[in-house]
Length: 327
Image 1 (spheres, one colour):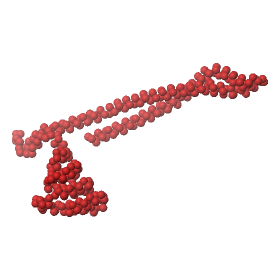
Image 2 (image 1 turned 45 degrees about the vertical axis):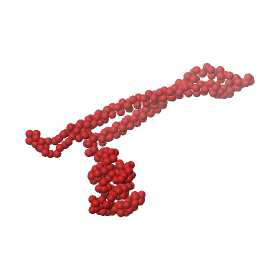
Image 3 (image 1 turned 180 degrees about the horizontal axis):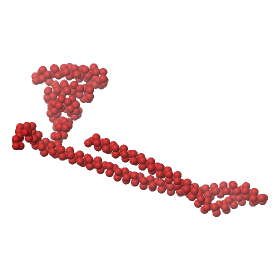
Image 4 (image 1 turned 90 degrees about the vertical axis):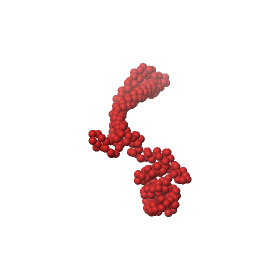
């Protein structure tokens, strides 16, 4: 179910991103087309309006400039007018038409800018609304699937909780002796699926002996290492106690299992091997036969790891110290 949901969510995200890119492309195309189509027309209208409006005022200004250029001198007036006309037109245009044209175009661009910004805000809001609606529509089936899966899991758990026993091959419904499935709890089911739940509970209760016995009984170096990591904050307190709250059998088994695999978490394992070795009681008669054999195996495993070219230098330094302690 998790893989299906993950694939479904990934596909939805890719589809939304593709649609968003397409909408942005269409928006840019529409804006560019609008500017190309409308801007020249607006500029032409502005120039035409200015010329029509200022034409009457332009003639007196040109006449004044021509008179000023002639300076009241006599002579052929036509030649003087022709000679003075370009300068008079330039002066009149610069002083009258150009400023008004600049003001009009500035106003037009301000209007265009305002309209463009408002249009972009409206479009962004519309896109956001569409996106929210699309997400809601796409998420509804996912939410329904999650609720259905949750209901199925809860139903299965409740069915397990209500099971009291399973009859085994009796006559007329009579129960024959057989394995009995006792009613249990959801926490117990979770603990069976994930041993670290029970191990963590034992450690939190301070039952270090029970935690390590359970982890060692699984014959899993991974679980033993996990328990060591969970107890790491209390390691000094554990081995500083008198007596140590771990039995001699647990200490010996702990060294044996940790030393069997030093490829991962080597520093953590070596610290616990050293502490366990220092806490051993050689005078314990119950371990007289097993102690030399197991310590020899631990020493050999440590020596092999120390000689391995792939062992990091820092780990080799720790190994030398632990080898002296074990030896």
